[in-house]
Image (cartoon, rainbow, N blue to C red):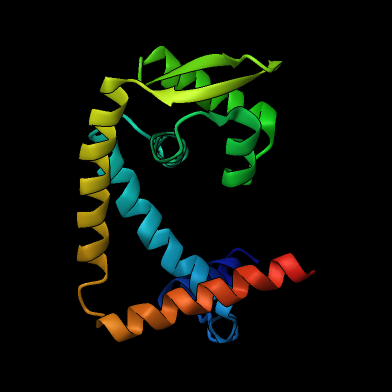
Length: 160
């Protein structure tokens, strides 16, 4: 029995795992590509002490001054309680401020501080460079096709 286990282990170690069936699915291919993008983006953002979610929130806040927390949660497609952790982190780092909305005492308008806007500028430039490097082997026509395909997929979710 021990020898049988050892033979089985040795045979699986010498043969590459085939994912041919999975590679027939666009979702699987998207996930594999996303893993590459995510890993490189994580390394890129580490220099700014940002994670993908904190970076996304900062960009949306800078690009949409006065954005309410509920709007930000919707835009990021995350639950509002999970957003509080992200907002707290950005606020603790003095990258954003929360102002009460005068017409709705329960709501907060989010605005970037000067430090937040400066970090945004540097981080967006780094992320732009990160994407340019990852996509360097694709021509602009192919990139447009990918963008268009993603848009169609997103629209399919809205129709369901």
